[in-house]
Picture 1 (cartoon, rainbow, N blue to C red):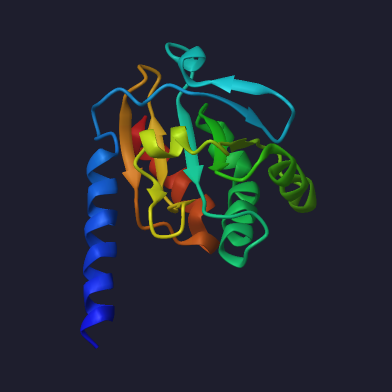
Picture 2: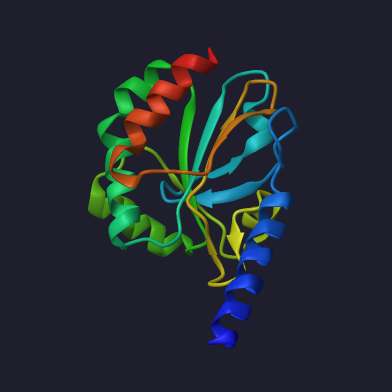
Length: 170
């Protein structure tokens, strides 16, 4: 019985360390250049001064929660788009997997692929217990700074939550 408690404590401390590495609200978001499901490559700094950015990290394509989250973002796309923010989902899946996933859901926004996991580490979302991204969403202003971080994402209603948060950040 002591071993599982020990493992739980180690996992909790690793997750706490990971969260400590995440950029904080008010800090400049880590720059990245990532390929996406739409065949394009995106560089975060290219949005600076032009457009706010939302990055919704999810653990793994073709899983229940991630499917629900991506569908919810799609279903609320008009409201999110009306805010003027660029919307991206992101995972550590490879580009081919994310392309198939996006096509299967008819997504109208790109999924960024980070198979090297370097960007996930920079954002503090890489879960060391399973080497997948945690389900966190970053709201980045036109100035390139993190405006908000949602670490309590509810997959099936996340699109509405993102749209509502964007209204409060204007």
